[in-house]
Image (cartoon, rainbow over all chains, first blue to last red; front, side):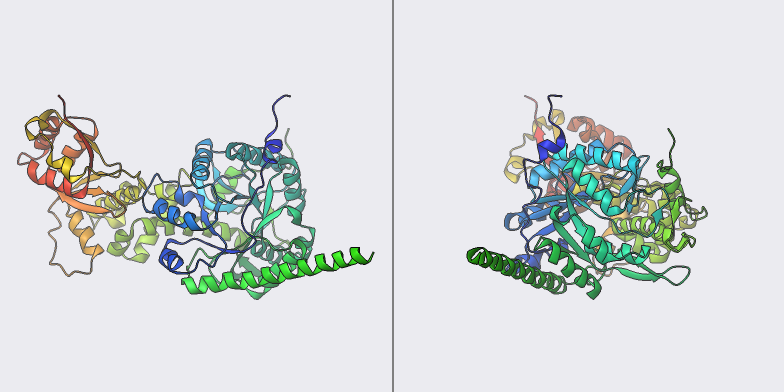
Length: 308
Length: 257
């Protein structure tokens, strides 16, 4: 075949040019505070679907934000993990948004949200097997072809598993990366939530994750509940500060990955700007420690070479 | 070929939307316990998320009926109508009609039209940008030739004719001003425009919404006046034009030569 595949095409461009700094999810209530501050966050992330109207305040605000800060566009509606064909109209709207704002990164979820022309407004789970792998790969290829760039695919929060799964989530994601050349968005809170809910080791998951393809990390707070037999049931609610256990897991991820763009997600019960900024500042201290650790190890390697 | 890999998303969605149905049997929990509580997380996310979206979209309806009533009503709507696209700002198109047929809300006959007004406001918020006709061009319009002129309306323009005072209700809920009792059977015709970023809601004189609808369909000013007069014999063109010009509802007027 003469035509190049989508994956060959997308390899020519880096997936993300986000700085290896802490960013926050943009909320319009914070715009005045953001503009009055020294813009001491590394980037802002928006949900693509909130900016798919033609005009008005959303775009006026986003233009102002984009002028001075790198932007990450995070889609929640493409339903990559659904068996049905992608909604081409919706993909077209995403392409228009990406062309309009030229974001530093574009990401979506390993999940589905649309079935039979109904959008369910949640990130729903899929089994991990050969059949689902085939359509996830086809969907990622199609999106990357349409956008002309690789996307970052995010690991979901899980509450249940499927009897028909044949792959672990990490193996499934690794296979999608291998076949599409997409990159990954590692949601550390989702790892912690899934590990608690499905009784596996979060550290083992991080250790197995294909870390060299991770170009962004998400951190958020979760809600706590219990199931029928009193086991903890954590819910990915983006409604609270990042818990200590998630910070520790984040530190572990950084020790494998090195510093990488990290987003504080806080979408419900949105806090005041200083509270949100304090979370980003905390992530920034982890990133700086990780950067020093990388520099120290490079220095000692250089020293080794000199002596050797 | 049928394998264990086939995943029935339709069945998954039916179980999501109907709490009477058991969770899909392809789901399991680590301890082998029933998955009800865990599946309920998805049920709750879908339902609460969409009810929240409606509450955000129809804040005056929430104020009029109270949070508890609104959420119960919205939940019935969510079960009957799911969004057709991931753009949640389009969700709720049938909400006003649903409310008009919702038996427990019958005591508030103005509620459906308030919902219509709020939906129009949401549409206007996201509508395309366009510059309203500047004042100097308005002044230069040849009044003697307006009969055959046509107009381009601002893309955010909506009109809602109601048998109830929906603009007064809107104003009352948007401001803290104390106002006297409303005559709930006095109809008002609402105009919604977003000339720059701020939304304008104004009352048009009787017949005004027919006038705007006619202009939107490309009719001339003369034809639009006839349409308005057909609805309201005492249609006041001067008052109507003043409201439309002040709110910035015209982006262009074409006068035939």
